[in-house]
Structure formats: structure tokens, C-alpha cells
Length: 594
Image 1 (cartoon, rainbow, N blue to C red):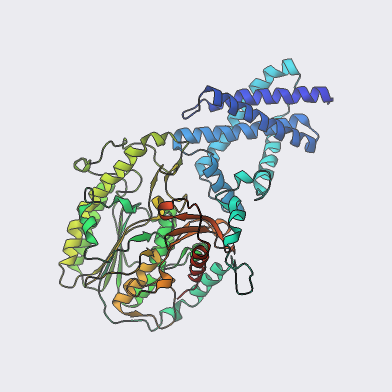
Image 2 (tube, rainbow, N blue to C red):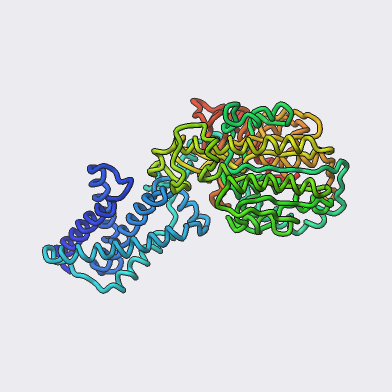
């Protein structure tokens, strides 16, 4: 093909893709007209650049531009349809998650994304075909058979997905999270006695996980208990710390008067899987990748079984959800009390009644794990508990969403729905905890949230995204037979089982398998909390909170911050280097299993 014809060909494709892109973008949550035109032109430019590159490689201008056109339009169509129906688009946050997954070789793309991308590609190709049929009469562009188009698009997509973006390349701004700012914090790197930067071993988690599995029987052998007593652990879904108030949850607001209640408590991670990991394993997020990959069940639950405890789970969720059954409860739960899902109001009330009924009918020692779901997505409650107004409609398509989502308009209403749901749970917990406290031999009681929830305070809805307070700071109460206080200001989920074992006088003689601390034994150097974004090893991110700071870091490679914040995630004008380095050094110590 001659140069002039090739140029006309490229122009035809650019114009076609630009027009088709504008049509695709006319969907719910679309920007105003001027911005729409800019996005359409941007799509045309992307197609032109990609098509030219493919044309040079394949020596077929028509094939290269057809493949690029189908890819760009499929990408745009999938994004806009996903925004319209699910509230999450391909913005900076979701692009960051996608790049994290690719670097970690994880397959975390929901099937609906794949289906929408395929549908978008088909529709985009059809739109290209119709427009090119018209443009060909003016510019002389030549069509190619469909199999060649599909092959070219597949090869282009494979090449694009296989190559990660460099941290310091021309696309630096697309590198996810704060990795692009790593150089800014190089002065805060932790150094050893020789002055070399301390590096964390990314494979240590897998080695520790293998060691725990290999030594399980020895770790549990000879375990004994001095003060056996029932344990009731209550987990409230998505229950962030500021749901507790005299107005909304009066019973929980007063619970700290007689129960151990750290001022700043953090979930071990930003979703249910990560929150239950720290709570039930007693291990920090340093160990999350290895244990997640090996599907090990929690050793604390195994230890309770070895000590003669009957272990019971009360749930309204499906055990297949994020493989919770396989990861935590297979072989570690003796009785599974399940209520059909779909109506958390009814299920939560029924589970509370079931727990009280079974406690009256049986003898100890028992470990009861009760998970209440009303404050999860949907945020449900009986009409009598609609105290905080305005509220969002109950039938919105809820899920993790970003600022591009139309759900942003309902931010206050969604938050009020959760506050009303929390008031409902408070009404269930008050009588439950009073009856437990009135038993002849009251059990040890734990009440906490598995993780938090953001309502666009920082531009997103839901959880899993980050380690900001809205997503990972939750309340904790540990009610012991005698009133107790703790000197610790900071705590996290890994501290719960060490505290319970301390109160029960549990002594595992075979070795140690926890990383948390007992909140009954104060060690100033351990007054901090760890939390993390639950990714696999390659892109797991963590934060340590302590000394009035929250320091983000990566648990592999150079031990240095990726962000330094103050209380409530407020930016600091100048970070105190000595305090930051000391906090990171102490956080790294918690890699060791104690």
C-alpha cells in the first residue's frame, strides 16, 4: 500500500473509532458534551497509535488498524457498561488493581468483566465494520476477513497484558498505589548497623507457612489450659469504628465501661477474608500470602479443639463466599449453624436466638463464633430503626465503586442506611450480651468488626481498596470475667487470640504460632497496629499505625515508606524521620512468629 493510501487508511480508522467511541460513551454516568468529545478523540488517537504500531509489525496496515479498533472499542464499551450497571469503571483505582493482579500473576477479573469485554469487542467490531463500509467509499480503506481481525486483536491484547508498566517510565502516573512516589521516601529507609538498607524477603511468608503446616502436631502437642471457660466471638460485618455512638448504638457505646476496649483498633485487612485471617489465625498480614496460597486452617481453632472445646459457627453467609469454608472452617468447626441468606434482618435475629438456645442446652467448654450481616452491603434493618435520614433506596446495585459511579450521589443515604443497620444490631447485641453476662459462669466475649466501609469520603465506596481508617479501623471489646483495662493505645486483630489465651491460661508447649500480643501484658515497643490491602505477595501493601503516625510500606524489598500520614490519615507537613524509621523497624519485627 502506498504512503498516501496508508495515511488515508489511518485517518479512516481514526475517524471511525472516534465516532464509534462517542456512541459507546453516551451511557449513564457519561460526562458533558465537551468532555465526551475529548474522550472520543482520545480513543481515536489511541487506536491510531496502536494501529500504526501493529501495521508496522505485521506489514499489513488494514489488519493492524482493524485489530486496534476492535480492542479500543471493546475496552471502552466494557468500561462504560460496567459503570452503568455495576458502578465501577476503568479509572485510576481499578486500573491499579488490574496492574497489581497482572504483576502478581493473579486472575481476579470478575467473569462479568470478561463477558462485557467480549460483548464490547463484538459490538465495537460491528460498529467499526458499519462505519468503515461508509468511510471506504471516501478514503478507500480496504476491509479484511474477520478471522484476521480476531487474530490481530488477540495478539495485541496478549502483548499489552504480558508487559508490566515500568515504575519510572513514560507511563509512571499509571503505576498503581504509591509505588511511583517511592523515591520521595528513600531518606526514610530503615538501615542496618553497616548503613545498608534493610530488605524484606518476599519468600519468607511461604517458608513460614510451610513450617507451620509441617510442625502443626508438634505445635499443638501437650497444650494445656489452666482456667477453661467458654468463649463467644461476635463479628459484625463491615462495622467501622464511628458507627458506635450514644445516639445510634447506645449499648455498644457503654460496653467499654466494663470491657477491654483499645482506643485505636484496626482490622488486619480491608475485606472479610483478610479480617478473619488476622482474627482467627492470629498472624499479621506479612503471612497472608503464604497461608492464603496453602489454604491452611487456623491453628488457634485447632488448639481449642485439642483442648476439648466444641467449636460452633453461626452464620447467614455462604461458605463458598471467597472460599471462607475451605480457608477457615473445614475441620476446625464441630457444628455449623446456618440460616438461609437473603434476609439479614431475619437471619441475624435467628442466629442470636439459636446461640442462646444451644448455650442453654449444652455444656462447655465451647467456642461460639457468631457473624452478623445486617451492616454489610444492602445495610438492612426493620422499618422501626430508620432513625438516620435521608436514606438511599434499598434496591441499589451495591458493590465496590469509585468516584465515577452514579452511586456517589447516594453517599449520605448509604451511610445512613448502615447507621440504621448498626442500630438494629445494637438492639440484638444488648440483650444477648446481658444474658451471657448473667450466666453462672460467664464466657469470655469478643465483639469486633471484620473490616470497615468507605462511603466516598476518599473517593470510593466499599472496602478492599486501601488501608485508610474508613476501611480498616473497627471497634474491639474483649469482656473478661473480671473488669479489665489495657495500656495499649493501638491494637489489631492479631492481638485477640493472644489476649484470650492469656486470660484462659493456655500454654502451647510445642512452640509458638502467633504474631500478635496479649493486651493484658504491656510492652511499649509493641504499641502499634498492622493492617493491609489483601493482595498476593507481589503487590500486598501494608500500613503500621503507632506513635500518632500511619506509615504505608511494601512487605518485600527495601523497608521504607510509600506514604507517611498522621492520625485520621491526615497528610503531614514534615514527617519525623526517627519516629518513622523506628515504627517501620518495629513493624518488621512482627514478621517473627512468637
